[in-house]
Length: 125
Image (cartoon, rainbow, N blue to C red):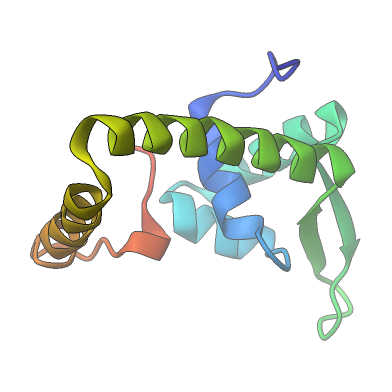
């Protein structure tokens, strides 16, 4: 789909940046990496045109990292891929069983006993 410069780890960045952006520090915490590592990833995504830095609305020294149009286009492309996969699963399992599967998977994630919750999924490094 034309996004050959994106890797799975970038999806975790995009997850945090939707819908309204994030700071580099928040991104580092979300990914479980150092601020320097997060800064390098942000710089790469800026160079590739997926994100941009804007002045932070409340912190004069800070920057807010937000998705560009290219970044949002990539997010929509991934959503379309996942929707297609989900549709195939519905065709195999049926809509009722798919709903049950979603409930079961959500229950498993929430009962894992770890500090991972659905909005804080991280790469497994």
